[in-house]
Image 1 (cartoon, helix red, strand yellow):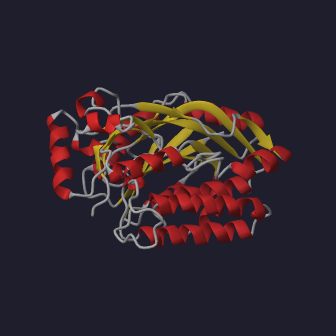
Image 2 (cartoon, rainbow, N blue to C red):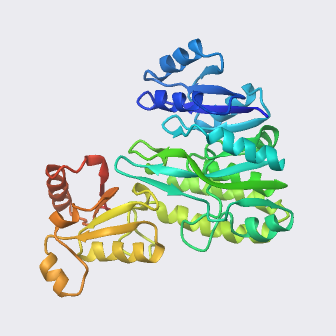
Length: 383
């Protein structure tokens, strides 16, 4: 069994060498590495060619910038092996990543192998496993355990099977079929648009507990960016998945999950126009990785709203709630502490809960003066 590993690259020179070296250092030897330079304007193309020149396992494709879906398809068209795995250019994998997944597929003659992953921020690493337990699923177990909860598992932003393309190995021909009708303009949720249709048409899947894929979270990550086309993208994603699920045998169990998934997608947005909202202030979901540890800075009206939303959705963990008026607020029964004490905690982000620009900037300056990096500071919504 051979695996073609595809790495789409766009302006990733800061991380690319770490990514490529982690792949070339795999214990599993039957693989090729296809690096697709999607029109990079930094030094990524030179780095790609350097690796291609010195290692015969490496193929390099240079193309104009058309987005990650196009880059992945170009890689699949060039792939020689029957199995495909993806690694993003800013991520890396453990030495046993390919071996454990490939061995599990080969042993069970499965259509897909699925692992956990490690979410990496500058300050922390967190192992995340799929909510559906490790095991081999086919026939009734697919229909009764996997399909009913693979896209939505019991709660907000919880997946039975994580939507990432990059912690899995797929059969090439089936994967290419799932890519045939996809809207290539989908830029957020494009993994889900491939993974869940693929699973629906799989006869046997293998889930392993190991977390060998390291998913790097940083300010340039696509999932941390919300642009003016956010709702247009969400609409494309919904329409595409709705069409796929309607044509599937398991439409009745998939479409309710899709509804919950899209509620999460819409909630994640932070639009300027607040009309039609049921709450005045929305936590900036789009700027904070799900499952992160945060310090919530501010316990006024905005901070209380944010706190309630986090408690309700369980989207992330509040390790401390800070406010300069902590003495007065503590007397009111709120679990608030002094900013200096809050900063002693380990955290991924500090979310500033205030609508006034002057106060937000004042807090940000204070945090930076205390050694907090600017990229870890998240501004809540503006007035």
